Amino acid sequence: MYDVIIVGGSVAGLSAALVLGRFRRQVLICDHQKPRNAPAEAAHNFFTRDGTPPAELLQIGREQLRPYATVQYRAAEVTGLKPIADGFDVQTADGAVFQSRRVLLATGVRDELPAIPGLAAYWGIGGIHHCPYCHGWEVRDQKIVIIGNGEVVYHLAALLSTLSPDISACLYGEPSPTSRQKSQLRQMGVTLYDAAIESIEGDSGHVQGVRLGDGRLLACQAIFVGTKPQPHSSLAQETGCQFDERGYVQVDVLGRTSVPNLYAAGDMVTPFHQLIAAAASGTAAGSGINTDMVFPPADSHS
Image (cartoon, rainbow, N blue to C red):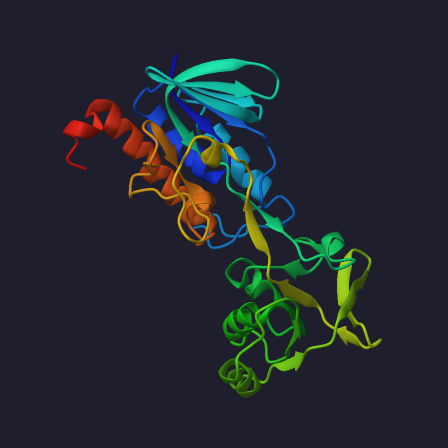
């Protein structure tokens, strides 16, 4: 039986594994190898690793786990968790079943893109992004179009206005911007379009503009779009975890969920989706798991 099985081998999961490996915990990382940021050219805002390609960042993380012989990595998707007397049965898609005293869910989220023809083709590497913190600097001073509802457009425009003087916005979905938001968008110099969006157009692998339903082409070099983060996995729901009103798994500061011996970390527990925040979340959860194995929660002062 393992001490801990970590479901998800991206930044949060690997960070937790590092903490646990340093305490000689028997750890199995199960990873479906489908990270959310795979389409991105580089990861940003990660202290000491700014600009590192996401796949390289994960490779560094896995390599730095090698000195800790009690940590194992398995390229497999976990499809089921079954509580048992002293932990969980953990089933993978290839039919294997493992037992563990504790389980950490670090399965992350995926981006549900607007159903606009052409958008998916340029997602990530072709000039279409969703996070100004992750990709805003790289498109500074460029012509930018924002796509989203009133809340998304206002939020993204306010953030991007310090990086580019040339921003347009296309409304897509509800709610519409309020009168106050429209006024502030005008003050920021943002041109607002309420016409239907026909498609995203580009050439040579990079976006060139947004084609409106009336035939106009809003030329641009970058697009920021509002996405709907969705859970990568249904395991948290299936095991009975409590969720907050925004759909994120409720955890305490050490990653404990409402289910005994089950922990969660990373993008699935917070709307603050930054890699370095996911790493911190994984580190906290790893520390929480180790603490609880030394001091059972009933006796813990954490």
